[in-house]
Structures are given as structure tokens and as C-alpha cells.
Image (cartoon, one colour):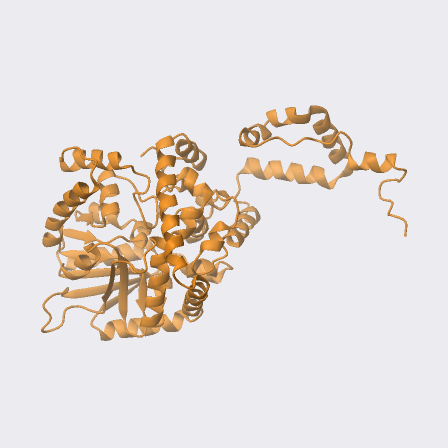
Length: 470
């Protein structure tokens, strides 16, 4: 990993921009995903699919309390044990308590952003429990000791030769540039983990209220094995993941698949409604569902509720010109990168300051809004966040002082005219002075007019402030 996710935001960005191999990998992967998405949507009425997906998510969020109550009741009726967690600490406490009660030593996981969000792997390992990611991409970055850099393709920043080197180091395999051989290596390594695991943990793509069903969307068989082979299965779901019906879940499955990986539907759509019943040949002895808030209620209480409509397809990430230049690790330790990450990461935190730079990691070009399958207006949310950062005085003190001086000068005629005269005399040399020097590194400095508007107005025989003749 060339980007230090623990460094300050400007350092992370500089590290990413200095890595030509990283940007080449990002360009290649995101271009491929955008092309597949376009092909998948060309075969359907994309506008209708988008409208219907938006309506499904909007209904779920507007009826969230009732749907969550219905979901809980049906999960319990199905034999599940339901737990509520206000934050990451409570969710981790529930998982560890379940593990200790069942004497769990080995855990297998399906890919889950919410477990990355709460730091589940570290908590399990600190408690002496071995945990293995079974999604191929997550398995690779776990071996590499890195966080994911993309919601859908967590290893998007790695080249084939990088993955081969990781396998050589961690799994003692010979060098290879054949993807099939690397997949076979991972499959063999993971097979034994499935067979010894005491607990399986997954996230949740959709939680169906009317049936009490947890759905996960995958392209590998690992998800179904995680949910059915171990004797204890724990699903962790953000409260916003609830949907009303099976039909709603299937519609969102299609929208997510086409926008995420360019498939009509993903290879697997695993539905779990409870533990093994008498007569069943497989399934867990216990099924636990943890419904976690962790800042989502705060998002809904403010004017950012649209952010909770997200179905985590990653389309906004793949289209974003900023992400394609700096990659996911430049956004920090958050599992959410790109435009949606720049919105939800600051909102999930009680204190916006640690992630205050992320809403500014956008060109506001609007491409993310145009591709979003549930019609989230991400540029508007980013602008609102920027405004909040200023209003809360969360911006760096140097920036606040600089903007205050600048705005004061612009509101007063004498300082404004003095600055204008200085700018005209310096011309483009002004761009060589701080703080414009850094700004001008990647931009063409503007040409200042030889005469001000006030001067031209006087030369034409009118005094400043004099209106046009009627």
C-alpha cells in the first residue's frame, strides 16, 4: 500500500497522486466497470428501473420505524435472535458476547462494509478469535494488511503482479500471472476455514420486513457457505437496509447488480430467514441479527436523509474523476470512498472535524448524481456539508482567518480597490504568491483586466453608482 491511511488528508492525496501504478490500475478497473454498467442498462428501461428503485428506497426510509418493528417481529417468529445496537461499541459487544457464549474460536466472514465501519475484525482478534475474510477481494487485502479501497471491488487498486506477490509471501505459492491459478489457491486456502469455523458473519444488502429475511448479494459461493455451514450465524445490518417486501428486494437486487458489476443479476442472492429447523439437512443452530444505528438516525434527523437511500452499488465511485485519480485509501480509514463516502463518512461521526476534508474531495461535476440508481443528489449533499463545516467552525483556523480577511476586503470599497490595483500590477505573478501558488500548480492563472469596471465607467462619462438613463 503506497497510501498511509493514517496520515493527514493532504499527505494521503499526495501519496496517491505520486503512484502512477495506482492510477493505471484505477483507470483500467473503473473504465471496465463503467463499460459493463452501460451494457447492462442498455437492455432495460433504465429510467423506469431508476424511478422504481428510488420509490422503493424512499418508501422504506419514510416508513422506517414501522418496517423495523415488523422486521423484528418476523425475525423472532422465524427463530432468530434480534439485537439492537446504538453504536459500534454496542454492536461489537453483542458479537463478542455471542462468540463467548458459544465458545467460538474461528470466524468466517462474507464481505461487509458495516463490519469494516465498526472495526469488527480488530475487535475479534483482540479477543483471541481468528477471523478470515472469505470474499476473494477482501481475503487478498486481509493478507496484505490493508483496508478496502472500493465498496464493490475492495482490491481494485492492486495489479495482478501485486496479488501474486502477496500470495507468494503469505501463502507460500509459486509466482504466477494466471488469474485462475490465483483463484484456485484462494479456494484451497479458504475451504479448510469454512470447515473449522464456529461462527459465520455477514452484512446485509436487504432486510425484508414482511418475511423476516436477511439477503446478501454475492458473486462467489462464499456468502452462502458463511451463512449455512457454521453452527452460529450473525448478520449485521444498518437500520436503513430494511425494505418492505420480497418484490422490493428483488427489484433493488437487479438495480444493484446492473449498476455495480454490469450483470443482469449477481450470481448469488442468498436469503436467510432463521436457524435450522427440525428435519433440515443444513443451516446454523443459531441465527442472530444485529440492527445497528451508529449515526444513521442523526443523518435522518438532519437534511441528509437521502444519503440513506444508497444501495452500495459503487456506480458513483466508478464515474468520479476525483476517485479515479486518488483511489479509496486517500479517503482515510473509512470503508466508504468516492462521492457517497465523502457524504456519509463525516455524517456517521459525532465530530465532523476528522473527516472535514472529504466533502471538498469533489469537482461537483454532477456525474455521480446522474448515474445513481436511486437518484441521490450527491452534489447537493456535498454542498450542504461544506456549508455545515463552515457554520460549525470546523474548517482549519488558517482557512477561516483567510476567508474572513478576504470577505471583509470584498465588502469594503477601499480595500477592494487596493487589492484590484495590486492584482493588475502583479498580473500573473500574483499566482506565484501564497496561497495562490499551490492553486496555480494545476490551473492556468487568470488574466487581470488592464482597467477596472469602475475606471471604464468613469471614462464613459458616468460616475460610480449612477444608473442608466431611462
